[in-house]
Structure formats: C-alpha cells, structure tokens
Length: 553
Length: 65
Image (spheres, rainbow over the protein chains, first blue to last red):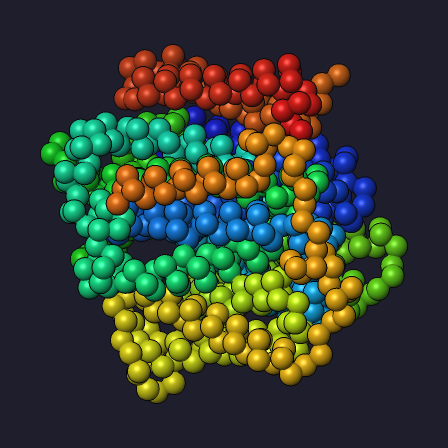
C-alpha cells in the first residue's frame, strides 16, 4: 500500500488535533482530581461515547474484522451477548455503588467493601495488565504499519507513543476522554463508507450473503454443537463463559471502562453512561465485523479482483489483514488517509485508555495508599504525571518484548482471562451479600485464578494448554477452552469466597451502607420522566438487542 | 465568547477541515480514480462537521448537560 501527500496530510491533521486537545485541556488541570478523574465533570454523552471508545482499541477494530472473516455473523455474540447485557447490569445495579461510594477507582471500592489486601491484589494485577495491554496495542500497531505501509517498527512505536504521551501528560484523563470521543467518530465515519462501498461492490446485501457459507450468515443457527460451527463452541459455554462470566467480568469490573462512567457529573449520569453507550455499541458490529464478511464475499465476486492476503506459509488466509487490505482495495487516495487515520486512532485510543487507568490506580491505590500518604495534592498531581510517562515507557518496553517473544501475546491474553474472570464473583458477592468478608474475597480471588491456571494446564485446544502433563479434555477451539476456563475460575472464586466468608467475621452493617445492595437506600427516579429513567433505557436496549439477535438468528 | 473546550467544537472543526480537504482534492484531481468517492466522502464529513459546529454554536449548554 502506498500513501500519497493527501493521505499524509489527513494523518497529520489528526495528529495536530489530538495534540491540540491536550494543550487546550491543560489549562483546566489544577489538581490530581482534575488530572486523574476529570474533576468528575464529564457530560453524559461524552462519558457514554468514551465508555465504548476505551474498548474500541486495535484488538477490537482489527480483531473483530478478522473474526468476521473467519466466523461470520457469529462474531456479533461478542456484542449482543458478550457486552450489552453486562452494560445494562452495570448501569442499573453496579454504578450506584461505584459512584455512590465516592470511590475514585475500582480497587478503592474493594478497599471500602473488603480490606486493603484485596485492594492491593486488584490494584497491582490491574496495573500490570494495563501496561501489558497498552504495550501489546503498540506492538500490533507497529507490526501492522510495518506490513502494510513499510514503515519501520521504531517509527510507528515512537510516533504513536509520543503523541499519546503528549496529550495524556498535558490534559490527563479529560484529554484522553475527549480524544476517545473524537476517535470514536473517526473510526465510525472512517470505516462506515468502506462497508457501503464493499456491499455495493459485492452486489448488495443479498450478493454478500449469497457468496458466503450458510454458517457465516447466522448468529445462532449452528450453535447447537461445538462441531457444527466454525467457532468451535457450544451454546452453553458461549452463554455462561462469554455471556456471563467474561462479559460481566470485563464490563462490570475492569477499571479501564468503569472509569469512564465514574467521571460523570452526577449519579444519574453515571447510571445512564453504560446504558446510553449500549445504543451505539449494539450497532458497532455493522462497522467492525461486516468488513470481514465483505472481504470473504468479495473474494468470490467476479470482477472484484480482491484477494485476502495469505500468511507467510502461503496456505492460511491472514484474517488480521481483512480490514487493512479492504481499505487498500476500495479506498482511493484521500479517503485512504481517513481510513488509516481511523486505524491509528483505534490503536492510540486503546493505549491512552490503558495509560490513564494505570496512572489513576498507581497514584491513588498504590502510591497514596502504601508509599506516601498525606502529601499535598500537588504532590499527587506530579506523581500522576510521572506515572503517565512511566506507563508510556513501560508500554514501549512491552512492545519490544512482544516483538522478541511472539508467544508472549497469547500467554498474556490467557493471563488476563485468569485474573478477570474470578473478579466478577468477588464483586457480585460483595455487592449483593452483606456476609461476604475480606478474607473470603482475597482467598477466593487467589483460588479462582489458580483454578483457571490449572484448567488450562490440564486441557488442550489447538495444541495449547496441557502444560501440567495430563490432558483431561480436548476442546474444539481455544475459544471454547477459554470460555470453560472462565466458568471454572468464576465458580471456584464464588464458592471459595462464600465458604470462607461464613467462617470469618463480616464488617458491621453500618460500615456497609452504600456498598451493599440490601443496606443501601435505592435511588429514587420517581421525579424523572419515563423516558429518562434508567430502567426504561435498559428495557429499550434489551428489546433492541433481542430484535438484532432474531433478525440475524 | 463561545467555549472552544466544548468537544462538539473540536469534533466539528476536525471533520469540517477533513471534508474540505477531501472535496478540494477531489476537485483538483478530477481525472484520478475515485475522485467521486472523495467528493461524496468529503461532503459527508463536511456536513457532519458543520452539524456539530451548529450544535456547539446555537445550543451551548443544554445538549452538553
């Protein structure tokens, strides 16, 4: 792919705007709260779009198009089953506790609800995970641009990291959130024309569908057995593993996304943030998954002259190239610049989200809690900025690590699953059972994580796992294996936490007001018009997502 | 004075500029492949950008709340 002056001009314009946002926001940053929490002043619509943009990183944009090309419409399960219900649950049931407790982060909520050791465990694992996620995002960007544009690995890494550093260092979380919203529109408006052009080129929607195998055009029809569908998962592990454990574990407890709702202006906005975000989120498959299907359809469309590239082995299709190769095939110079800027934006959005979540957790949950307490606010503002620089440098180091050890990416994705899956059990019990104790939560988390590791070590899928020397089960796909690992981790954590809690002393009830559902006064939405009530929004969201599932059944 | 920190201004300005650049490029490269696509794409971005700028200019606080 060769870029021209006009493409570079558009990319340069985008860079100028994102850096400009950093300089504009800088004037507003006067305290650590401004820098790390946006002064809790973000309007609802911005918080909502930032909420989904923080998740709209490179893995999402490139990865979902790749999955679309590989699995077809089934990939939409990651949205309609694996995101929307959890976002509704977060808005209706969990945000009142996160926001109402005045916690500045998810680990801080754990400190209030449980104890310091549970907070420390979560804060440290989260901080490490965000750095690695950010580094992987950077690595993926550099690798992609090396392949499609011929840019050097170093140039891509230092350019992207340098720009993210400038705007997050200057404007902190507000700057990251503002850029995430700009990036959201850029990704949608930069890729949506590709979908329109691609469908037109393939002879309309019917043309696309007629050129794909039937299993790629149905979300549920082939889910009866793991052998029948290309994903290699059955309906139960999909519903429990993805639809419950992994999605609720991610959307309800991962500070990276929850932070975007926690910085809303008031409780009502915080509750509505994930609900409003659910509307664009449920339609994102049409922007990020459809290009994958279109790519496969175009390969079988006479006269399109499109071919999805092969991997270096010359036999396997390189699905990760579905979106970039389609951009190169369908966009003329000019529009190509916009499309590539959208890809750049997605990488930077993911990285900035991770770095701003990292600097908050580091400053408030590690540094202020265990290293230097009771310092003036200016000190913590300074620490937040230093943490931002450190986060970027550590991400660059991680990107080089990923380049040296290819398998490290698979390994890290697996470890994230180990850590995230049991966490939802800890929160669920903590919010809805007042008897849950800190000892129960802490050992439940450790036990759940170890159970996940053991399940991976004792099972096999596509040659992965089985490192404990025995093989108790062979899965049809690594995806199926990951879903079962998540279910085991959640169940172990849930049971261990409950059992240990019964034998240890719980907090007095008065300490749990605002932290546990049964002891907290319910927010009164009686003064709101029906269409402003969170429950009404939730019902509309769920009905719409049900309709989408039925349409693409 | 209008608040230029309002995100609608930033988004509007960005897409309006990108739209103008694409339309301008389409006009000066009429013979090139895909100039129509750049024209239509640019028009969409320009309209979206102007819409955001109108919202920013005429509805300063109500929408942002």
